[in-house]
Image: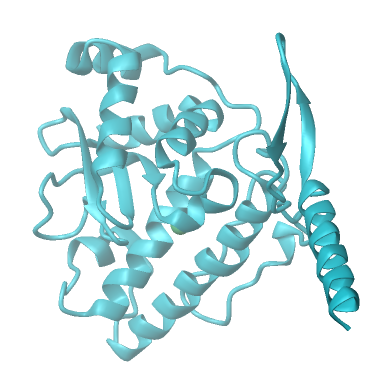
Length: 260
Ligand SMILES: [Fe+2]
């Protein structure tokens, strides 16, 4: 009886050991061969939908079609993130903003006017109108065929204000990194025509009353985790660096020319 028990115990140990070994794989380095534990990677599920299928409920504001497919920024922002961001988050902001406007008896279709005269105690309107406007800009200034640098008057203004484009990017990255929790990093044109970098929490933006640096946004970086978590997890800085590869300065220039 004791012998049988000992045999079963030994066999169990051997099976357990073999099982552990099967979770290791050989890694051939330049000077040595070693085994390391393999970590199962979570695959990023490919997008399955089409941006043109995204429709808001009846209301004042509707979806502005995405100018590119969900997978066209894939190298920097994965298709599933783009799909969820556009077809779920953005759509929800639009539908909820339309409801909040209706509840507030606000029939305006001027989004900038709505933001500038925002009752900051109206959380539903503040969050959802901000969410609508902020995402509209974010999706518009990204492109698979992005103009990589600003030109003309905007470039001159950036050099005058920040020293160089790289220094502006550093300031934007810094603003994005320092925004605790969810929010946005912005390049704005202030009332006096000068450029400034700022950030806002949640879905607030620089058009709203009482913000730290008021101005007209011409570039917005979404630093909510929903914008980057699938591909970058907690590495917000890596996402911001990647974002600059799909940032279309042609659109930012167009925003600047309207705002200055
Ligand atoms: Fe977002």
